[in-house]
Length: 154
Image (cartoon, rainbow, N blue to C red; front, side, top):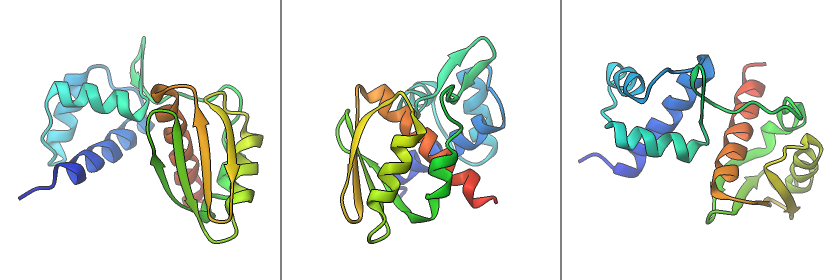
């Protein structure tokens, strides 16, 4: 029996990958793209997924937001220390890092100047990041994940 949480996580990951290649014109197009790749989804679940990952609708279709402030190079530099990024309610991200790396990651996040982040606190292996809204939390998560993905391709 399929696990709905794993299916949603797989859908989110695949949707991000598809959107990183370029905009997708409609939600129905995204349903079809996922179906080709073996993931069944409805338009309403795609709508929810897009909102949860922080995608935005532009004149070109659905896209992941781009930072006008920073390319995320600061976060790319510490990507190897990141272990997990987990939402905790609508205004908090919990970022688990390698032991002793949380303050370095928190500083990189500060230097990124990403406007979605109000502030953060770095401990030993955990960073708490505050955002203003669930939408900004999703956008920030996407930015962190993209920075990590770029760092892994170097």
